[in-house]
Length: 144
Image (cartoon, rainbow, N blue to C red; front, side):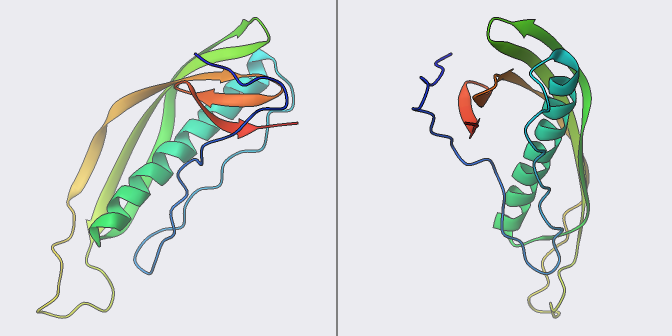
């Protein structure tokens, strides 16, 4: 895992799709944890990963032109420990969605609604310091 040097942090954008009618709004990412200790970081990475997965799934569905009746992603388990210079952990999420017919469609352009799907569990590894957040080795947040 490569960590950014002080003053040289550049973050990749986390998923945050633009949506249209027939799709829910993306979820906001949580604010920086209040302290770089196990308890606040556990809460932070669980909320961050749930928002990340929700927004990634939303972007995927939005790119297909389909609409959603329901979308959810939540953290189901996490392991977080103190490490040198920060806190590291793994978060497991589950997600599900139910499609629906998009507003404004007519008989000739009606898309087939997506069915209901319970998506597979996914895990992501995090490393959080007072300067940055890494998810699966990619810098997603830089804090001064």
